[in-house]
Length: 174
Image (cartoon, rainbow, N blue to C red; front, side, top):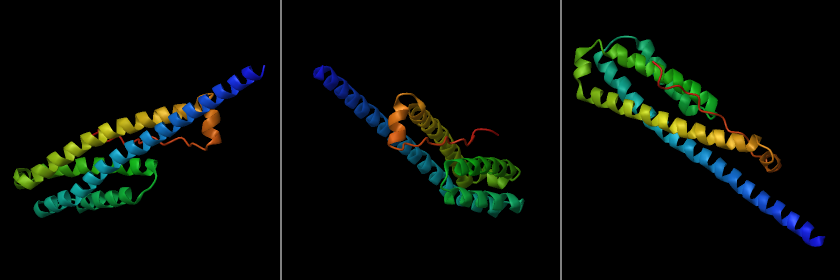
């Protein structure tokens, strides 16, 4: 009888260690995936002032669009919550697309090599953000499922693992 009890305790301990390690792994995957998104957002944020300056040189139009792009960039940079960043980035992507469409009306600007390079770099960053967002949301889904699934939720609650928020920016619309 004591052997059976010892075997049950050992099995429960092993289960707890395995589940805890899986929770830690999933949490760290979410953090690493967010880091990837953050890097791409910083790349985009670094390109925006250059884009605004290039457009401002050629086009004396829609200063409201240029201001909106700058303000949304600032809002995203200073936000700490995934949902807020997602909302700001969705609006920012929309304003950038609007800025690029408005710039089409200026042949000199469209032919400018630095503007074309900026446009290409922004497009490249947008694709990287999409890939990073998908990876991040997959990692969040795995973590949140583990936290909400019985019996793993018992350990998750005991060790205060929190569900992560999805990055909902829909950067490909437009």
